[in-house]
Image (cartoon, rainbow, N blue to C red; front, side, top):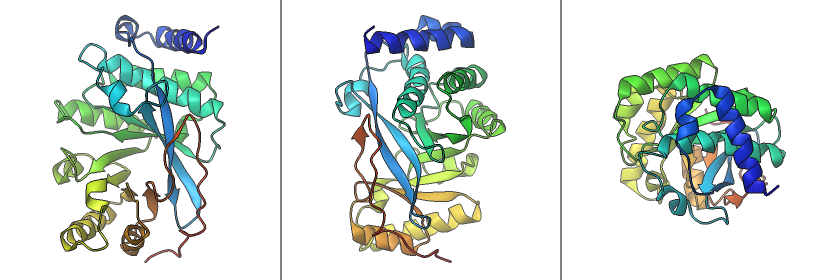
Length: 269
């Protein structure tokens, strides 16, 4: 059987078992896959998580997939992403002590109970420990229903899923969102990270952001780190989780293994 057909059949079985009529009725007519990029802990020298980054079936950029989304297929795509990411991570043999980070669009979620049920069934099918799942809230569009998002995040918390705000400091992902929702992780956007070693404005914003997250007992992730000077400045602020080209570039349907020896540091007080 063709691999894409086999994947579709597996997904259909999962959605049928979940009992979600909307999942069965709204189809995604295009194929997609994932690249994986590590998030590393420079204190322990371990990979904390791999983020699943959507790509076209031949490693085309994410835009080639996301540009095909509309209001009719957005929900089904979000659900299919979870199933596909878990399936590929399992086939790649992702180590059992590493989390799988999956992005979700808060405006694409229809019913948090059914969404979680689909995810749980997929994890069961592929024997993937659900405690290893990390959900990143992407905010490319303004949240249309904050009360519903609160219910979704509460439901995730009840299942023990850690959550993250992605691209903090860009678009709609700002302090207002942080005040309303209490994720486990706050991922600082590349726009703030870039040139942070020599830009006083960015330094002031980053110092405040890291202090705020610490006060709220949230871990901070610096994403999009590309230069050693940026890394050294951000590490000096107390950040221990890093993601970016300096660490490792995303690898299509593969798990990159970065050499972390040059990043290892003593804990920062």
